[in-house]
Image 1 (cartoon, rainbow, N blue to C red):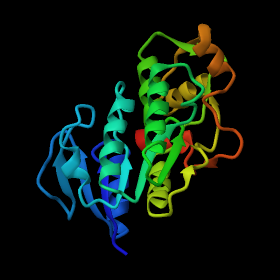
Image 2 (cartoon, one colour):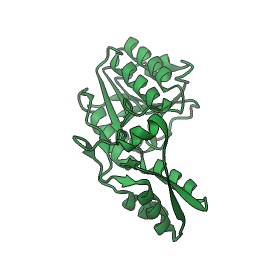
Image 3 (spheres, rainbow, N blue to C red):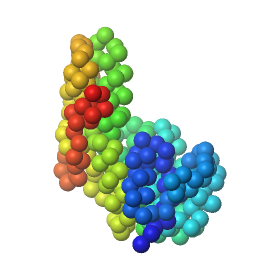
Length: 253
């Protein structure tokens, strides 16, 4: 059966991977972004601003499913609440959201905003699915690239992450989107846990560079949360296939 899907964030890192998978599955896809464009490859593009509440009603009109990937450093809760209210009025039959592992445990405003967005989805009155994923390899790469420009790389002591490949997240999201609403599903994390020094060494090795590293202590509640592994999902999580090493080899060589 053909499904009519509204995709937010369709022009971002994850959205660009999700879009062709939905197309290959035979879905009719409409992409909501701040700047609309002409239809391309059977995909309709409409303009709107989730945070300002502009253009949402016509975007959701006729959509059976909404896959909400759009996010920003600020305002995720408000933007998702605006979308969820419009989706409820349109009687969308499945609202799908991508969140982050540790949304309910890491005391940083971005994580809190994602948790607020999760609640907006769950409280929408619609059938829903939320997937919490680990940080993408792409974000880890930007971090270590920036650090490698310094003469000495600071390494937060005790901080570990489980970076996941965006392609693994895209494939999982499409599967969940086309399945029955399932509420909060098992987290999706990468196949390996790394210390920050390991991530930097892997990057430096592929680039043929050397840098000194200096341990630093992350202070306060945030530091304690990361040292306690609150950003990790070590039990019961679904794991992606591609490792950090696989990603670096493919992206940088």
